[in-house]
Image 1 (cartoon, rainbow, N blue to C red):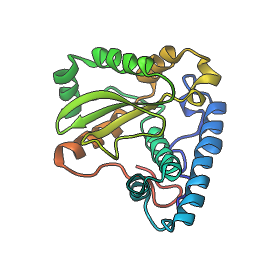
Image 2: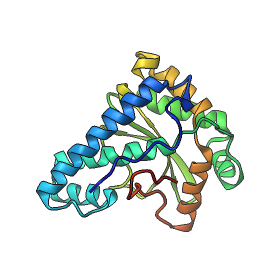
Image 3: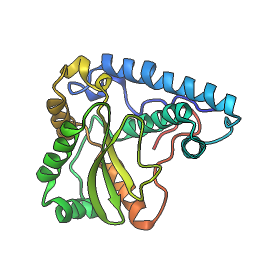
Length: 214
């Protein structure tokens, strides 16, 4: 059975970019609902003993769209919480070198990331990902992520669904993305993911028990 992972920070830790009110709705309502529905559908399918990653892949393989959407959103949100911190510091080490090689500098990566997110039509996710030691920015629609059909390792993700930012930024997705990139990116988490990509290791997995986090 999937459990709702706890946030790795207080509800108000991401203010002013993301308010405590938004975090309570987003985590306690939206994420919790995905967990509840994924568990119900997994039980009906006889798949309730699988990890979140296994459940996403198995649901996709079986063509169970309802289960896939719920399970993938559980995973996406767990990864999203880890992609943020209230104590953001600029990237360093190998990741900083990869950013320079791939984009020129951090400012240019920000432009690419924001452009991808703003240009994405409808709901979804914008990712910074690595293929080995090479970086790319891409977006996925609705519940889709990088667990299936991609060889890329996700380093960071930002939620483009309106419930992620509408209370705080209304329809200004661009303003949200710029503020998010400048103030909330957990570059330490991204560096761990990048190291895993370079080493051919699996990287982040959704916590097996509530309260665990990277």
